[in-house]
Image (cartoon, rainbow, N blue to C red):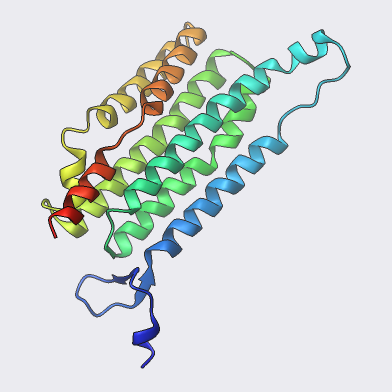
Length: 217
């Protein structure tokens, strides 16, 4: 009787069909909430100019540049995470933990952003900022792997990813940028911005794969 009133968006949690039911939207809503809080923390850490002239505004420019770069990164992760969850039909413990791992590393972005903004562009804060960007990239890859493991090589996600060139190149650029930061910080900042620009280009792979799958049913 109760099962008839459950929405069709419910997906099964478990590996043997004997798990409990959980909405995919619940997983997405929790992740959205965490990312929203992370962005809010960064906004609250923005420094107010001490004065009312252009020099006062210039003094807080480094904090603002670091904030904008981090905001763009978080927006990119939110967009891609939103599309990624559209490929999920079954959730297990590995997916839940992989998703939590991603959120953990994203939660460190405000601290790295604040340190970089207050010491822009000092070598060590710039290098650490790159490493903090690297870890969510790795965590996102692990989340994809957990979803692929649960749904198989013939899944929508497997079809959508293909060679996943951008996903493989980005961690390499983060590593090179972190190393370059110790010698030429501005080069590292440029590489971090380059990765953001690469991912700003709309990636319709998952949307296209989902549409093709639905059209084939």
